[in-house]
Length: 447
Picture 1 (tube, helix red, strand yellow):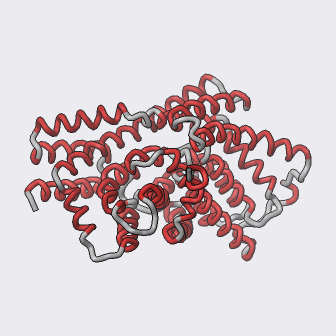
Picture 2: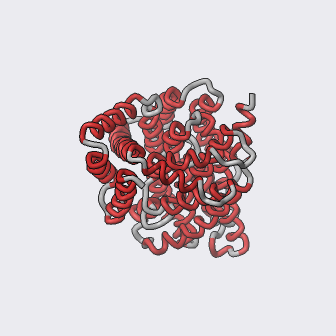
Picture 3: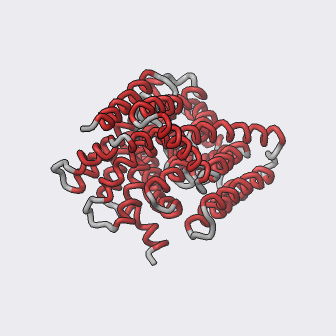
């Protein structure tokens, strides 16, 4: 190994160690990349490399879609969309055991299709459903797990910001990656729902039906609420995801339509006030700045790491392993799963995934190169979703703890562990049956 290759490995070790201590990920990546780049590549080369990465990130056509999708999510939250959905589903399935679990997970699934963020969904679900589930006698651990797991669907189901960033890294169009993520996203939602309903059916104490005195009954009023709550949302989803999937608009154009549509929806619900717009704009600015700074810092770190030659060294080591194609794929998935515990998804996608891409592209698993990368992207997305459910980072737990202080972190983690098992089962199914993620891209783009 050359000096620069060893230096790159030391840089990687330092980055992991410093982040574990608790330093800011973005500034850690920037500082370590610049210091080690100056040592191994020289100050001038590192400066120009940093400049090119920053400029390249700013010129990327996908980047403007990130704040607009985030704005769309926060505006839908401001419009009280989740409250309406949850109240409607709660009444619609009131006689069922585990009806509140079902309401939470259906609300989270539909809301995920109108936003690409996680924190807002988990927090709102916690505020909205947490106390109600406790008063209804629902199991605290399972309730916490359902809220946290349901809220993370926003990172997987389009228009996910994570998939928006992942597409250019994998070299696949965002619309095709969105199509590939629908199957795994709906599979996970279905497994979550099935788990909660089956357990509640056999043990009613875990999730009793809604008391009769609290039920609205199946009448015109409920029908009207279903139409008012769900139909506008479906129109908003169709105007964004529909245009992306059919190729009528780029992700950025569709994001602009979605941002406008969310404002119109908020106005129709009578929630488009000046304070609401200010609050949405402020939340969008904070979240977008955090995501884009992390993207830029990860790009710079990854570029320095590649220039030092350490990425090529790791790639060669993985290619030389005496494993079949599926064995190497499983090894990459295991590494990503372990990386998801301490790291945020932008770091994994922008620093580590480019190292694995040449290895994945050489695998012979019976798929064309295009389908292989789509399958890898969808599988990777499900794997990275576990980062929100796995300690010590497990951001969903901290979002939920903030709005439900009566639930301690131990209880929340135990509840999330149940859904982590479901996550692993779903991941195994997607790896074993690539059609789960490829059926929609094949149907839409086979010609």
